[in-house]
Image 1 (tube, rainbow, N blue to C red):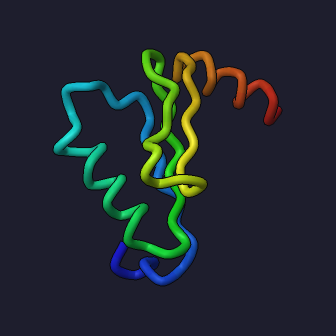
Image 2: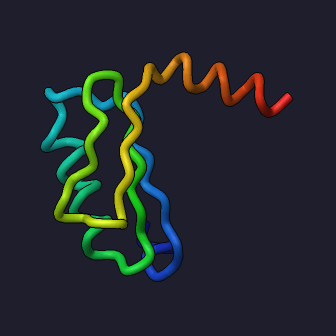
Image 3: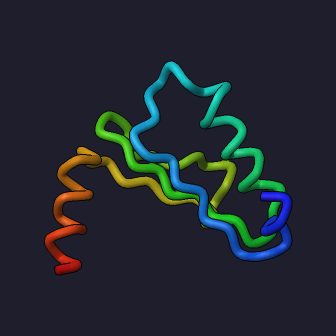
Amino acid sequence: MRERGNGRVLLLELGVGEMAPGIITLPFWSMTAKLPDAHLLSVNISDGSAPLQLGSKAEAIQADLGTLLSAAQVGGE
């Protein structure tokens, strides 16, 4: 992040559960808000909502991560 902080950054929050907000979720939200060209993509099986305070800088996909990665692998072949 120190090297790319002034460039475009995509933060991927993959399968993060509700028990890890202080470790992953909140720091990712903070970095997304602070860095001008940062965007957050969250993939979670139980919650498909992006934080409203990040506006268009955040997207969420409610899906099973294993199924999503398998579909991406099949589509890439």
